[in-house]
Length: 518
Length: 59
Image (tube, rainbow over all chains, first blue to last red; front, top):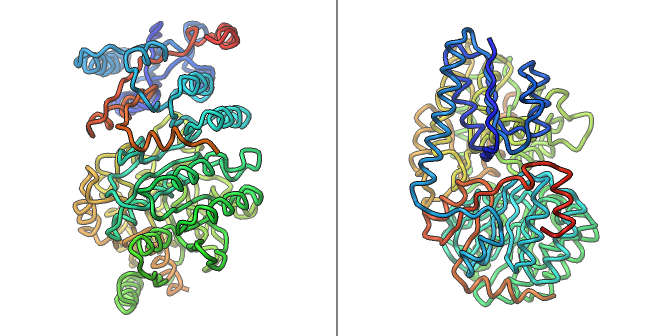
């Protein structure tokens, strides 16, 4: 039984609709449901699902579609009503503040003439023109949207450069400006370290580690992932960020983070850093660090970048090390975690919500044991044939587009990862699960709690097979984050998960345990 | 490289316009940031042809 409702001129943002969609799908007797805007992609998806009629065919991206397939007409009606109630609740809540919400940027600037920054998260195909307007109104920009073309990015960054404005993005998930976390970011102590990062979770992990080391930051500038990787963009925003941090008297140490950069972009950035005269820490994820020279210091991991910067900020020498807990304690944990495993258990399953954290783990395992399957692999023979199915040692980035079509990012909605944990549970060859728990604004209110039952069930199933499942985690977060980091840690430990101080240390411990199973 | 406006921003209170996901504005409000949520809608009701014409006209 199908029921379809199309509401003309009723725009809602996609993340909100995905959360409603999830609730409607869970309705007893509902076989499938879609709550979305009538964009080309969505109507195409609905057509493919067979949930389609002429009203959907004629809908526009400004029209709301509620389509339900249920066991009976009564259930379908009830489900549609439930969706409408949830949407209405939202409308009432939004209107509670009596706050006028302008439709146009002109009006917004008129209402808020002292605005100095705009956060843009509208669908990517509309974002560039809005950002252009904003830059022309002399607003600094954080562009969260993805699906912005390379041509548009270049044009926007050229305009921003001309005007001396920040254009952080596209696909920029994290920034901390003047101590205020924007989008997906953590509450970090203020201090003297300035960061420019072409990686969202990279910036989160480094800033949180700086906080854990007792130090703090001035600014955390995001650039979007393509800024250094693409030689046509050439690190434009990173170079502007470095220049601003150079001029900033509060910033004593500069940290730059990026995935492997294009060679010419890297050269320019390194020359700029040298010229700042300030101590600089560089971490290009996946590139062999060069030898330190002058004011330039190269880190081997995200955590090390934070540790080096914290030491430099205090004028101390940084001692390179792998673990912050004593080596014999690490060996004890590794021994304890492996002793109850059975002989079939040998594989790692890294189930990540943070892309850069997944990359960091993958690179460490690649250099440690090699042959790591992933949807983020650059070696074609090791790219997962089906990202939904693990093979051998697998590290999967669950925030990848293949997992987020029609559903929120796993940092917002942990059910994607929960489902994957359940799936891995039936594989008797899994020895270690390696997970990231990312806290902070934007993230789920209880990411550890949300996967606790599935992890505990996974451990029980492994025990029932006469084995033991080791679960190694780390928490990207600080004491200031609203999720309560200590409680998150306690929850994980209550079911026997090991919580390490960083993703680097979690990965290195997991590597040690996998090494023992061979 | 002209980055004067960026350094000026570092010395100002953040005042934000949020165009898109509302939770970003709510999080900023929680931190005491002055923020204005826009009621953004696809231009020209999502009609691509008209939207591109409007863009060309600079609207």
